[in-house]
Image (spheres, rainbow, N blue to C red):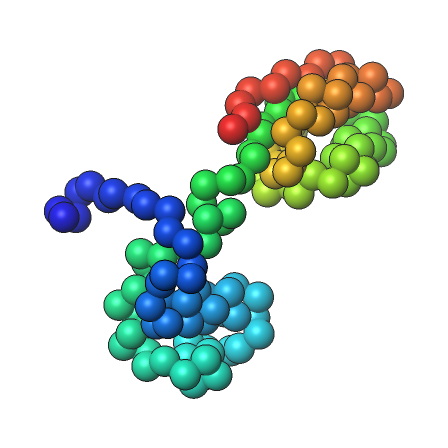
Length: 147
């Protein structure tokens, strides 16, 4: 396989070699700060650092790479205290995990905000956008993207 193309497969973990499963465990431990270094994490699970480095960029848990329900909304908000906070509370109440938030400096009393978030129940996104549009201080809401 060339460096320019990748072929992905989904494989049941029961058929994977133990080194792959341990590599995934080390990656999780490092991401969650359960261990301070790859050396410590590798020791904890019982694999060599060289084995970890060999596989770390090639193996991922399915949910991390393939099942992310990521959405981006554009909002135009009045420049008033609490408006953005209310939007964020609405996202929190919907169990959305905010990934990025970009806000412009207010011009003529309004600011644009773009929020990217993960929402596991993608069927909820339409209702969430409607609730955001109904909030006090929200001038406009548009769903820009979703997967």
